[in-house]
Length: 251
Image (cartoon, rainbow, N blue to C red; front, side, top):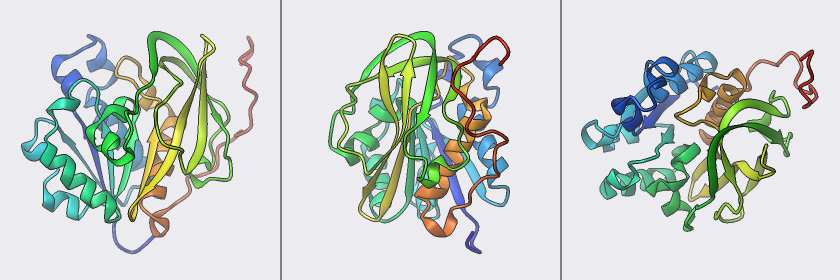
């Protein structure tokens, strides 16, 4: 790690939390999804400066002053993409092109900043029936895949399926499969200007996915990678990273 403290901002629109939808969300994420994501990151980056911001904050919590000192911005949005200020989006875009890392999570695929940086619709197929998701590592040599078991098993999750309308990614790291037979490019990277982008799809407001240790580790690895090499720190080894995918009665 570089001597300078890593500065991370976890952004969440916060609309679901404000509306307490679903009713169990307050139990799953008492500090909001941004709080859970930030808490997971503090396990891997105890010395980092990790803060959160939401749509309701002045300038969405993403002022020029905040972004100027931010190494990595994480973005979770869903039902309020249109409420995000174009001025703030342009500001974030400028900082990404200048070298700030960006991690886009789950339904942030439709965020203004993501579609603007990628230049496509970023549309996909979806179905929310609480199906099991298996997240398969297809590029184990990539730093973001360090220490990640294959597959990660998510008991219940919203289904995202192809076609995912994105440009050809720089790296395809994870592919997910679902009970209905769909597959999805669930972990991909892009470079824009001097900045790095990592998109990771698992993590929905209806399910406690952001509490899963392996999901937290993927996000932490992604943060380290988009922050550029001087900040990358590999997380500790997991006990059995190559366990079989079949969940038999004794597993």
